[in-house]
Length: 371
Image (cartoon, rainbow, N blue to C red; front, top):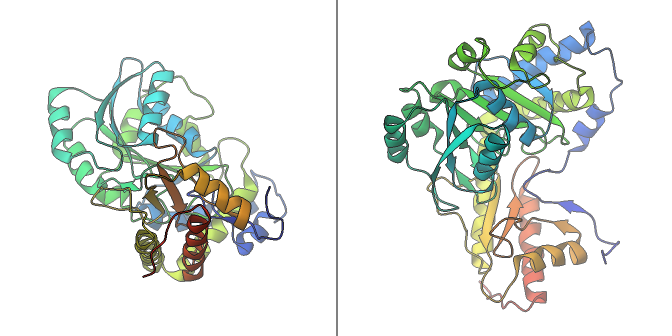
């Protein structure tokens, strides 16, 4: 049973806690989604999001989860008979393969062990050997804490006819992303992670290289996910269909907060706090699972030693301290725990994470050595 006297602490790698300032913005009155008042909100939001994605593109908004945006990206750039090369090093790379196959399209994979990175040299060889409409990468693999080197990947893909499609659902807002400079053709993200909003708002930014394919009518049959409709609507300060207005109000407030802190400062805060959590949990005897050279600033993933069960740690923290972290629903079930380090987090959050985790491990019989 949950201890009702303990506060509820959301420390997942998404969805993340929504700050009070954003919750108040979500409560603003609903207005006409085709009217001038909302167009002003859309225009400001569209400008504020661009530096976080590293783009000059107009950013399109959808009522969607992150998975919906992954599907939207595929549906817009791939036509029947096309083939994608998916870089797989975790759960969400595998999800991209499932989406492609569900759309009756073809997927090849370039696989690295979970927690490691797919090499750019291997990618270059694959692109020389076969023709692909798209190369698919996960910027921040939240199942393992591995970050893709998009700059290197982009430098390889830009010299081919393939489009580079990137899921940055758990990266945007907490990790550096330079869509234009790195040659990312389609990047999709969602509201509920480093952007500090509730789930339900999806975002997409598309390069001119990708538009040259999309505008020709290439792609799957699509209606709600049609980027062409979304682009036309965005030019008017609208969404193609009914707008998730409260979420866009919330996103605007989130972006105002990020810009007030300073985008460089926001990135450094995420880096500093994730590094502190990894150091502290390592001192408790749980090593970092991620072996990739680029470690995530938005999620920390820890190996659970023999004799402990990650699911038991997650359950015990919730039942005794009201803190919600994540385990794994994949082949890592019971073997890792995952803690979000994204959004509106502070030094105090990390201190309390370490204090509570140390107590939970002790409760479960794990001998924590004094530093």
